[in-house]
Length: 263
Image (cartoon, rainbow, N blue to C red; front, side, top):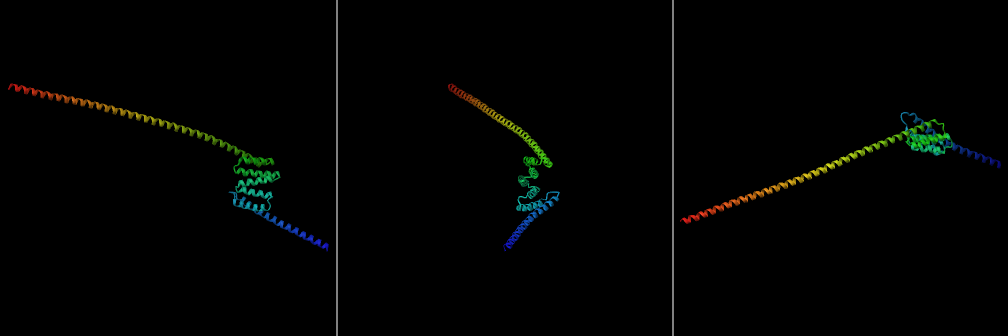
């Protein structure tokens, strides 16, 4: 009886273990199903050569995320999702995802690959200093990677051109500022000359007004003198006429007296 019970228990344990493995396999199948579907969308998007098929890459990203939710530690799926983000021009997100993969990876080749792609994402986002640093880290883990060496040289060359362009822009701005200052000085001198001319004109006008006033005063004085002379002359003439009249009257009176004596 005891032997039968033990046998029954072993069979039950085996059945439970089988069911657990079967359920686990089912979950694994679902995860791989998401990955396979994501890979299909990714491959279909890569067939479009004229421009990035962001719709298909987005579908691939969604499927990869579904798989990662079930198995977050799977580096390959995380890498695929980061690549799908990059293909959609989501460079900020893809750079962060590749960095996370590199940080978690213990394999130098895989770490170098993730850092290489991180550098590409940063380069596409025009973060040249960060991309150069990422490429250098990738080469430390895999010094023979020619693609990373090429991308590093390209990023450094682009940075040099950017610095040269910045210097040109700065020099151009300095020249523009100098020209602007010259123009301002010219305008200032023009304004000063204009003000000086205006002041001189005002002075000339004042002087002219003063001269006119003096002339008017002189003319008025002259007229007054002439009037006075005319008045004096008139008085003298009147005085002469009066004296002549008096003389005539006196003469007539004298004549009248003489006539009376003869009578």
